[in-house]
Structure formats: structure tokens, C-alpha cells
Length: 252
Image (cartoon, rainbow, N blue to C red; front, side, top):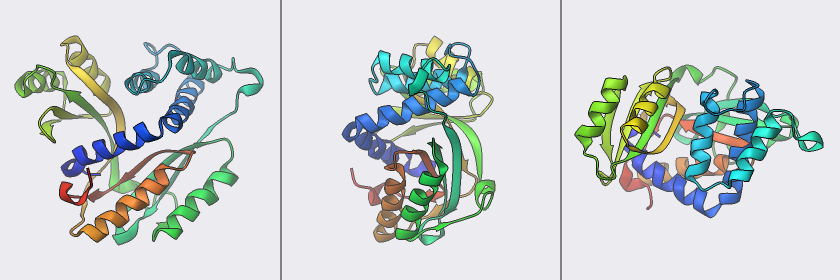
């Protein structure tokens, strides 16, 4: 989603996570394993990607032993239980010509690809070739913080001094969304933590360069349903799109 509907998207994703916490734990465990195995580093302080994932896992109350087990598996300590996971990216068009990108982790591409393709085609989308829409997105850092007694100006000054590109209040003004370059994400995150600012989420995202405005409720629900069905696949980690859906088209 674009920034205009970010707050509604956050609430929608939180509801999904709460309802399917077990699936969320499994997906995060896979991501942790890959972050460790791809770098060979199992210390979050020495592996920034892992640190972001561990923070996210803690934010949804993922048990400490689950996190440690995933790190061990990524280091090859899982024995027979360790399964190599590959990162796969799918891209194409959702209903209404909305561009989307799906990031997946799988131990069997021959299983995952047909599953993703089936959901796309059954829900009015089209699977594209690699690179067909990727150029419409760039990688950015996003940090969602809770005010928790801090003012917007407090957060703004810390974030901008650390190198943030954009800072904006969202939703009911209890949260602030901070955008950074991919390279500055770690520095801005650490500055916020040092200032005692409560970080709800920090991650690298694929942000659309331009967006497609969804102008009616029927189209909005069609796109949201399309995204939900992809996100619910076990191997899918994240789904990005370039749609801009006004909040009043998204249910609470």
C-alpha cells in the first residue's frame, strides 16, 4: 500500500497476525533462518537483517526458544531438521492493473510457483516475467514508532538528524511513520532507540515510485482480497503493491 493508506494497512495486517499467530511465527522463523544462513552470522548485533527480524519476532511475542532454534538452524545446527530455503520473487499485475511483487521462501519451488500462480490467476491477476514490474519499486527503510509520551517534534528531530527522508503522523496520531534510504535504516533506528522512542516495527520495504489510486469500494475490496490470499500462502513472506487505497475503503 502507499503511505496514504499505511495506517489502515497496519491495522489490517495486525488483525491477520493476531488471528494466525502460528503462521506468523513460522514465516518469521524461515526468514531468520535465511538471514543467518546467507551471511553465516547468528549474532543480531553483527547481522542487521537478523536484528530487524528478531525485533519483529519479539514484537509479536514469538517465544525466545523459537527464535534461538531458527538461528541455530540457519547456522547448520539443526541436523536432520534443517531444510535449505530459497528466496523467490514473483511479480505481475493484480485486478485493475495494480502492480505487485511477492517475496517467498521455499524448500520446493515446484510446489510454491504453481500455488502462487493459481491464486493470482483465480483472483483476476496476471503473473509477469521477472523484471516486469520491479522497476516500479525501490527499496526503502520504514520505521513505525509509537509516541508513548513523545511529541511529533521530538521524534521528527531525532529521525531527521539521523538521516530520515520523511516523517509523518498517521492514523489517529498515536503513531509516526519514518521513511529512510535502505542504507540509513540502521542508523535512524539506533538513534530512535537511544532517544527512548518506542519502535513498533522497522524493516526494508519495496516502496512504489508512483501509485495507482483506487477510486471505488468494489475495486478496493478486489485488490485487498487478492493481496490477502497471496499473503495467506505459507511460503509467502511479503506482498507489495503500488495501489493507493483511501482509508474509508478499508474495513476496520
